[in-house]
Image (cartoon, rainbow, N blue to C red):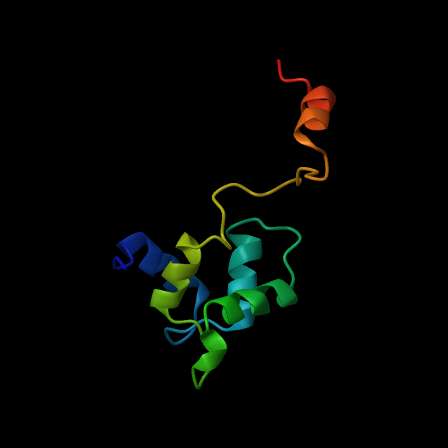
Length: 100
């Protein structure tokens, strides 16, 4: 994996303490910087679990893991506002949504 660029390092320093991020630090980053209004502590715990942070002794997020989070599927570039109803068959979907 590529090394984090300088602007990511600075961002990490702003939201971390002693070169590590706690669950609360990442939650604050997601609310303040990423403007994620509906994120919960439970969501952040899931991110730590996905990144295998709980496997480490201290359970803290280091710069490399923060960079990995920024690039992973759990952090999409655009917020997912709604989900498509995939219970329709293809023909029903086209009839209902009428592609223009």
